[in-house]
Image (cartoon, rainbow, N blue to C red; front, top):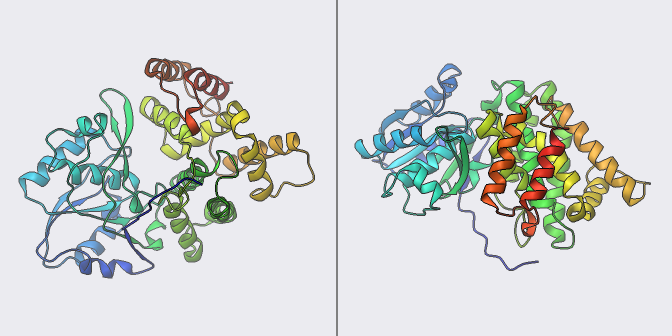
Length: 381
């Protein structure tokens, strides 16, 4: 196990009716930039619930944040926050709204625009941020990361801001999500956990068992969620699983991967594929091409998570790959780019970009541009 320093300062406020706690978390006298997406929170009543708890605060609404938030939209929000002299950011939505709000919180005091912050890895002083989560998936409500898109250049990269001060998680807020949103949220939580787990064994028994427990829980609740995501107890498990998938409780002292995410970001930027769906299109191919590096952990996952027994190592690997693809299909998602009907031109541009950058990715930088090309080609077969 590697040495590490761990701190996660986000306060989680969890459960039905927890919005009533929000006014206790925001300093009195704050001028709040309230960020949200396409307007679903207005239609389903969540917006009114939030506003009703913020009596006495001056609120500046900023809506229209896209799925995979665009740097240009974030720049407009930054300008609004500056002009209005906002002192607090409140994000009401899913990962895209929260990610955008982290960039807004940093951008208000930054000497550059949003995309420059992303591409220069800028870190600076941030306005405090709170969140009200409506779409469990990314874990952004309890981590400092954000992923920002530039639609003008068809690029999508990550950046690091600050943790939210608090996040309110009311599982009933997920009841109005579509089945596809739920499926992609499950996929995202599953993949986040794998990115911190599916490397090589022997690093930390504590981290392994925590990740395996979370994976088992996701596999257990997924069929129930797909059938009916308005059951409160199941919605609780879903929401907390997504949060723990990426609050970095699973990453203490261990190597991480994130190769599938880097590939998925390109697929989203070029073809507009929903984030969780993009990950599932690429995961089986990553496992196949990177098998020499991941073989031992795939075997461990097959036996401990998918309950595969009585097979030799080679057969366990194949059975695990089949189990992963079966899980993806059970969500109603594609398990390859070909199955997702991705155009060959998109695959070719992905390959070109990774060769142009020339940067090895993944665990211990083991995924060279040539291996990445093999992954993309495998996914198009």
